[in-house]
Image (cartoon, rainbow, N blue to C red):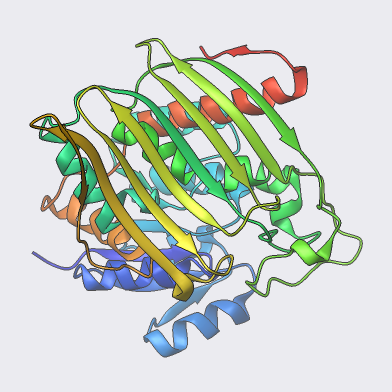
Length: 362
């Protein structure tokens, strides 16, 4: 079978994980598009990608041999780029969040169904070794139904620049609620993606103007740029199944350190998948754990699962899964239908925070 041929849209920080995952899975990246063509050339040159373009449209016009497109562009452009690729007969792998809101995701889902093509999102934390180990334990039946869970991605100093697209709601869709949605997704994944019922949420804007709370990624600040997104969110979700989920997301909040975790309580056992950082945003300072809490023979037992460390947080494995899905070697790690549920929840969190009241999720 010939190698899957992929074009990447966007030459930012996530593109390298897409490239590495695709190529390790046997695909060939034959082109990259970026609005700043110089950045496209800088990305392409050391990776021997021969073709660069300034738009997806130009790439599609020139590259008739493409099988798929990978999207690593700012959030505002996800919907239009996904639909353009699908309408041109290509499979799509897209960075999170899926879209800016649920209404956009409904349009995307309709385009997927019309095209008959595959669409996967980079919910990379599903692909982490700890998450895979935990899911296998859950699927074994040893946990039972998960009654409740806590999804946490908190940073003490993790604002991704000031005035750039991350802090501009019209481009990003919001702050840590939508940016750090990975643990919400992972908790839902462990819970078998139950249908949501109600959301109650509060968001806070403290520290958004304080550069002591900027993250370490080196994203340049934009002079006179917009900073109109939240810095933290605390929320509670209920589901029609009777399950519930507590959420805490922050870019800037008075924490000891950055913590990324899902903790759950099941009918037979509980569990925790956690990554703790000694320095916000610095993968090299992180430590992963995967633990089950259960009872055996009248004794409370903790089980530590030993998994390999993945400094990419599953990013390369998630991209590889896209290729394996297209070749039939693996099942997709996520679906557009799950993405729609997730975006409905994100919408409800913002709506509840704005109204100060619980919001029904239809």
